[in-house]
Length: 159
Image (cartoon, rainbow, N blue to C red; front, top):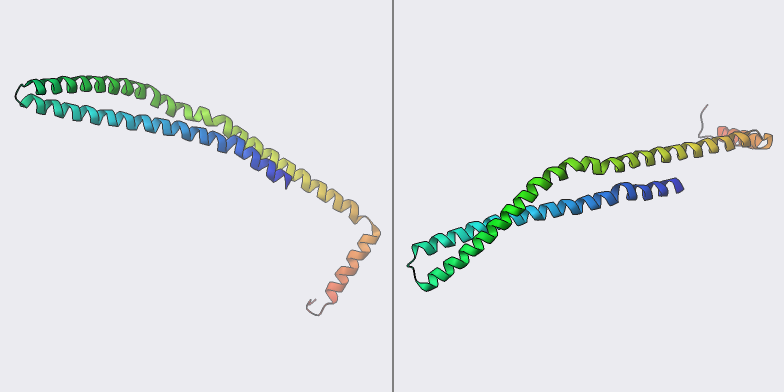
């Protein structure tokens, strides 16, 4: 029972916690990709608005709006390009390093199972040794023989 609890604690430390941390990193990458998609949509929206404003008459109000949308478009394009470069650099590293990240966890997982199995084998060996030591007692052997004889004499047991 104690071995099983130790194994459960070990599994939590070497598998569950690293997976939680990896999941957080995965969610951060996912949110960065969503942010990039949103920036791309913003760029398209600002570009469409600029095209509409260029078709309109050149009034002061239209010129002010056009300047504002040009500024927003440039800023969005810069942000988008910066984020694209970051994603192009970080995503391959993220995917490449995932095995390096999990390698120690897998090694610890295997060691934990080996230790668990070894401790269980030791416990079984100890139980067998205790059984063998107790089976040498002649009183206990006689009691066991009487129980076997009683069971054999029952009417439900056929010989």
